[in-house]
Image (tube, rainbow, N blue to C red; front, top):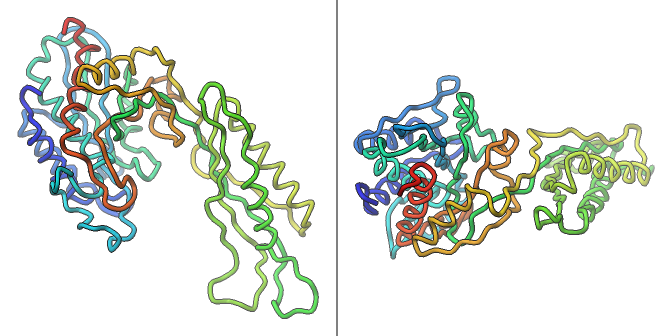
Length: 388
């Protein structure tokens, strides 16, 4: 990096980690102020996108002198929750470097990437006149809630030609991800007294049978496009009332996460769920049949071709920096699914070495950051300045 060194990027990442931005818990004003203050000091001109008066993204543009591609470096500025701080071996918002690791919630996902991408923008801004096209650095918020308000607000203006999403991990460039459908199933039974001499149809008993059926309902076989199978996972079961032991519950709620592939798409998932519910209702009839309600958005899977120009540029940049990542299709869904629906190609993972992602003791290894920064910088220059 010519004008922004490792210490500057690590310093910014540490300051961001120390500024809490847990999705759905903390306000985002403070972390946006920390980032934009650093960017302004580095000679950049950040623009803050808002929704309902609250910040949802910080945008930096480096505009070339000639027409060309519009490339986006995107990383989220909000973080997962901490859950159990007592389980951590250091303060969850330490933001310090110990034994070569930058420590704290959000260090890996994805404040180190926000710092790296800001550094690349600061490095390339003085030579914008040599570039063809536009580089945008997008630090988006509302990512960990699944609402994606930040990138949605950004995409309202225009669709870029390609997006690099800076999720962590130096071993892979993610070029696809399974889709997702989420559903809430309501199971009905019969209310009654637990001491009744008459058998009462307990909704939880029926729900337990349905959980068993759903657990064994995942489609068999690997999808040839994704290299992964579809998957059905029960994620929660609720019924009855806490502390009430004398009432047989008449309803139970089951929540299900379904991962989609081209051969097991949303329609196939809906058909499978309906078939399983019909079987459970036939085995244990009730006055009302079970019902299914989809929750949130349903995303189809996405996958770039192995030889697509976007991951090819990043792999070339990584190899130039001494790394050799493999192409990978991710099991989880990600921002790439949202972009894929809009026809925008995206990679969704390549970044520093990390630990504790969404868990305890989250950290990134500091000496893995420079090669990642060089890889992305080289990829951007290849796409915006073919003479480089």
